[in-house]
Image (cartoon, rainbow over all chains, first blue to last red):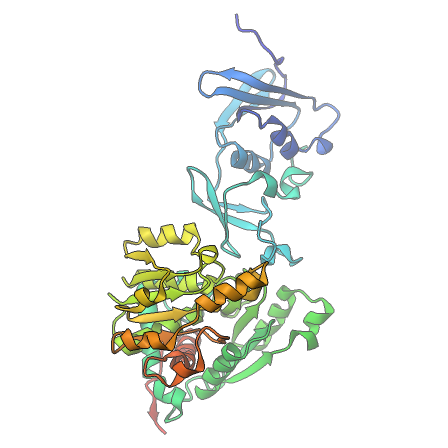
Length: 163
Length: 315
């Protein structure tokens, strides 16, 4: 029998196949502050995986992931899968899927970009390459290949319906 | 896609055939730009110029282009004396301008400002330079200058000299030239080389691109030398700036070895990159280039505001 390192959850979301070492980034995206009192989070780091060698897993009880947060997870770990659990059963399981355009998810790394000047505008990036992932700011046209430092607070904080 | 009502934000928004259409139209409008023919195709049309940073040539050439075609202009030329100084957002200023005028021209110190303006405005927006970003009408007039001299751009050998790293307008020009199948020679100080991403794109386009640090060798069998200014603020060390800028100055004696139709171009203003002795040489094309800004911008305004280019009558 398999040895379960993290106990199963009754209702909630399991984010599996997270790139090894990025579980804490996923937690940052989920935004612990916005969670209700019944949303316990279990984290497994450095778990053996047939497919990936090593992986991380995050389980959150009584929470459904907003599309914006799922996009943020896809950005930092395209290998991740999301399972919706209802009454201990997997109701739906899907890989994260990054749309071609990302609105309000990242802050443009170019300090001189118009989206960083207090204008009433959300950042917008276009996927210009999938492997390895590369984005382009639709405003200043600057390329972006390193995403974690540039995740917008809105993407990792309380915005969206993550609670 | 037609031009009527369209935004022009980045040269990448235009296909090769659309660039050709602008260049062809611009040539037809040269007599109007010179004042020897008249046109009032834009009579009753109002162009708003929102210049949020100083610019002489670009602003005056847009104003001239509009006035020569019978249109009128309103201008924010000094943001310090406008509501921008009171902290109004660009978005609000653009909304106001777009409710007054039939088209907008925006120059702004922040990259992406014109793209934002185009989203907010319900009238067409032309980007007249956004920070270190795009300046599509500059690229169009650069192409017009080469085409006027050589008829075709295909097969020309163009040397890009100076700051190829930070000057995004030179990146736009290089990309546009690649569309037309020119050969490029890159001549820059090692610290100001063209960024890898642009270089990769040029290589992928299939044109021949080489680097040459010795200017004499670079220009010997070239058709065009495009000189850009090396800016002092790019150097932490002023002695290094002085050394580099001195070595990227056009030595007039080099012009003794070039092909007969060879031209020297520069987006202006120049500082010391081209000494004044070159001005009287038949190879100096930078003042012609500055003039061609007018018919190129006339062509674009006419296409955007009316969908066509007038056949100028005698006047």
